[in-house]
Length: 615
Image 1 (cartoon, rainbow, N blue to C red):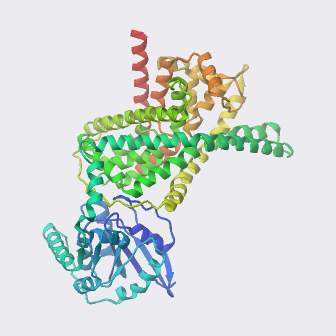
Image 2: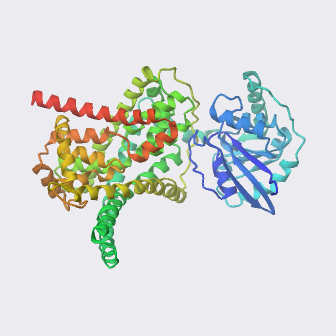
Image 3: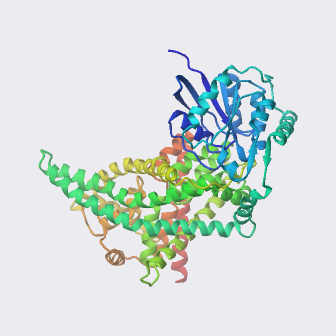
């Protein structure tokens, strides 16, 4: 096999390095407008202009001083693997800041191609760059690009042979990039940019500074953050109802067709019902309930990411996590958990300290994921809704209540993080560098496609694989009986004393246990058990659902206990498997299961005891 030239892509976080990698290789590595996203290296081939190259996308880093995992991985690869060339990617709007890393790369190898990305943003801010002066100073080929444009791939491949054959630059081999050497690089970067970069209108940065003053201000940062969360949840709630009803109707019609088709096959009636009323019905319920809010929430979340607002949220919450003796990067993983706790756990890789990474993993499920929203909203609608016929006001009120619940989840994340950092996982909090990226106009088409492919469909597929076997189990429990009573009824009867102690009942506890594969099926399992059905069912109207719950002893206090347990209970099966994969430890996976569970049980018990003592 012929050996293809190996080209490493390097650069600071948030300069478009992953976007360039995607353009070159045709792969779809996730890109985002925040720092610390790429922790693992990605690799792929590119054939262009008759040549084939092997590209390696290294983690974004600010220097080669090995102060973080990203810097260590990048430096080790550059020195030990000795790639044929390096593409150093910089941001045209803050070139001086990025050149520090470029100079360190040039001190190791002369085979460097400098790609200055985001030239369109530079033009908007009236920043001009003298490329000939940069080539003269750095002694390497320099190229200005806008990574999103189609011609970028061909432009880079045209200049790569110059980098591969370049031998005019310095090739010093530093054993260690100490602070003194790094200071020299910074001074040299300033000197080069003073000659090659000119800002025609210094006031062009006024907009960014004004937005930063609003989004990160002492008195405005948190209120705006809460308003954004409220608005995001309101759009999700208001927009998800209609597609959810449509999907439910569509899957119901398809269910009749599938049942009729299987009835004509040699399969027995029991096996047909097991497949249709067990597996298919649970999967279709999960899809119809889970897909619409995810299809709205994830694009909105990605728009905030593309715009550059999420790093500002991390900046605002950094002090809170510092008081908890944990890393501020935990804020980013906590926000990921809003969409899916499994994704939040995977995102904990961006935290360098093993102790702080473990704290972030153990506490991630204290923030409710998208799959818990249907149960929370159902309780709010039945017991805490406004007496109004306005859909707008109803959705706004539900969004306000859901925001309040999320704030409780955030508070418990802070509290449990502080408790863990002072007991089981003692240690001193580490520092991290948080770069606030420039504000950018979101690429709406890419936002929709990326959020659907990388997040929505990925999470939905994992939920379906968990829901399918759960549907089979639920049908078997509902249809197998002992002494005339189904196993479902007997399990709920066994759990009833424990449920009463928590202000709930055995049916609710059993529904939570059976909802381990997918939280979306908790309410349908409750309805099926309350109404003595043998298949998973859903109440046709809110009024009939309210009547069913009240007839089975529900009060507003039951609803509060239900909310507490919905907010704080064990992670779903997908998240637990992800935790096991990330920690490689059954002990810490069990701890991640028990920590939110004991918290939820304790809060339910305390609330119920208080109500029984004083009311």
